[in-house]
Length: 288
Image 1 (cartoon, rainbow, N blue to C red):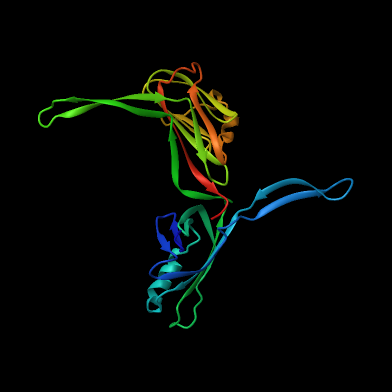
Image 2 (tube, one colour; image 1 turned 45 degrees about the horizontal axis):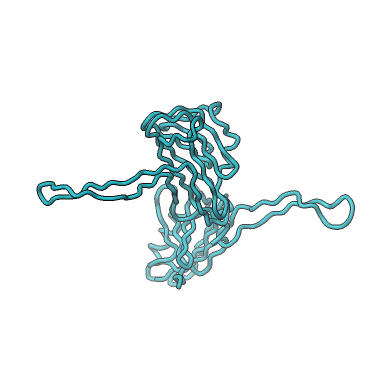
């Protein structure tokens, strides 16, 4: 059975941390992490009843917290910390753990906070409101899939002083296609890394029917990185000139819910597997 608990941690852009559920505070209410607001635009039909849907979008999130101090003897210290931490000059990353599942809202802005001054002997009540500029929440960890596998075959025993030992033998297999199963509720971007182990005369990366070809020759040890979120292509950390790849297709390199066929191959010779490749991604979710 999943853990029935709620925890919220705020990490300020300067590294300071505030726990809304812990030794000093208890969460009374949390709003804005289930579903974002939806906006549908429409116009009246020129003839007949009803409307024509012209567009739809998900809006930014308002995330609201109400927490109560758990030990009123700490009024002085808790109030100083709460007011000092919630400074709108900074950005905040919010980590939500709800019934055992963690999601992250990055780059939040503090749009309101209050800790009323009342009876100095009463437990403090802190109300905080954040604006998350994105509609989606992120998964806790990045995931990755490799295009290279080592299949163990057999071992040969050799005598090594002292104690002896074994020499392992295996077969290294390289794939140019990989099925990646993605279970996020929203499409997510990928970062594809290609490390050459020999001569590679250009690289084509693709997901489904969308592909990007990079006209760059790689020698052994060179590393090519294609990032569809940042919309960048780099070799050994240096940006590849936009004229050397079809960048208009970069935003289309995304994983959708379910099985996705990811392709990484030599653009000039499909049979060339003188490289190791990996695709990495972070899940995106419509709510928690």
